[in-house]
Length: 217
Image 1 (cartoon, rainbow, N blue to C red):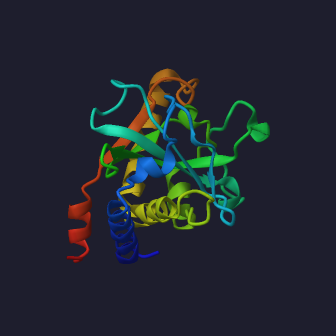
Image 2 (cartoon, rainbow, N blue to C red):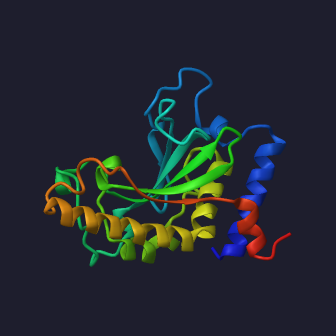
């Protein structure tokens, strides 16, 4: 999906959600008993064809940007990544890990359901198979969650956001790798992917500015 097409999808889905008075979080979370840290949906939203996935969750107050209601975690499945690419770090269970995923990015959402920022995490945060930034960047066009069983507007929105912000995500992932290299050098390379340093890079989102930069009025 080209950026201008992605921008159109983002605009259309936000308008659709506003018209229905059902912002992103209301399409994902249960009406009652929302639990900190829980995945919504419980077993993640998984695309039936690509195997890309997402989940949403909410941190306790004070643990994140005060503007944030919650955030999405977005993943490629390892079957979407060329077999010649090898992870630079993996879960302790190795190939027996429960989830064979590579984290694309986190996407923070404010209380009105508007995206406010991207962030890149350390490996342990999502228990991913960590691939280098360049490998993930190369495979970003394969991220698609249009066919999960969850809310269709949410699915389309997330697929389009990755396509619209591909350059920003790429820069953020390269910054993540640079931070990891510094941490590895300081720690002797022993635990740099497994403890602390949870958020390694971030990028703010200004949708109006982004869309204007594409010449869309």
